[in-house]
Length: 414
Image (cartoon, rainbow, N blue to C red):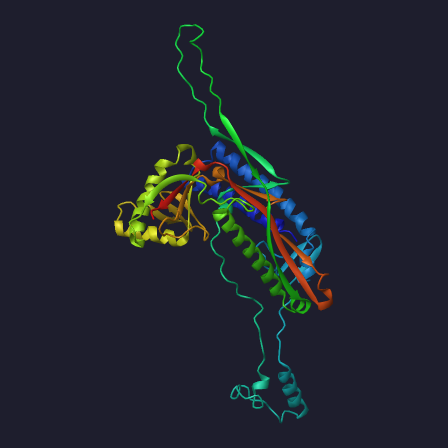
């Protein structure tokens, strides 16, 4: 099963949310929508309708779920649907069975055979098997509580494109230079020729993935376990790739952001964590002057969540008249620009680069071979004689800094 279905559902939700947000903004302002807003809403609704068609087609062709369970399809977040109807078929999730121990069954039958004479008192003697412990059922909750995923943000703010083979992407390395020309003619008084210089980089694909092995019994008896395994593999794959996109060497793996962006602001900090925080807050002002104006419209900050906490503490210590680190609508903003968190970003420490600022869509490009989805395959043959199935998750991806000046760094002193 490919994760394309999940990606499409997320894109469908995003398109609807975008249309709703644009319409709501006009309604709150008590004004009609502008021509540009009407065009945005129309485009978003068309995109949502197109995505819905693709989602229906993908759901009909989805075979992975049928390998796992007959209890129904998965929702957009990977959870099993309680009930749905599609294409003339109904899917209803049956209630989970309550499991009892063999001792409970024996005790119950003994009670029946004795016409109620050998009653078990579970309420008073649960710790003693013969006095009632055998009558206590063993119940395991059907939901597995997963660990919270770490912050992963690079893929959400970078430019992500599908690739079918290695792709050469050209880019300019210098701008042409214009010069003044006098009005009088003559062979020496001519326009100066100045041509831009170009280079290119290759967007390739590097494989990463993992496997899980599960018994047929647990896949049949515990429907939620199947969902848990798939979700766990998706998170593991995304976490591994996030570190590539931030710290990758570029050789045999994607090129990371750290060390490959604009120099930005350097020598920040005074040697202690609190001192770093104070000067780091000042540096977030300075780095805005380093980034060229063309990149400010879509600029954002990238950092660890702990770095954001240090900046907030420094803001409190500085007692700023106008707070620069704010939160609105469930999202953090620094100087009015969104903050994206990534656990792979360096922490605040000597010589580290804990903050990046710029237009990541123009500055960093991610290429996914064959599409953006993480592929999941069910291998039921290799370990069939052992009664086991292998789940395989993988994706081929690459990432490259395509415009270093679009992203500027804040680097602390040693």
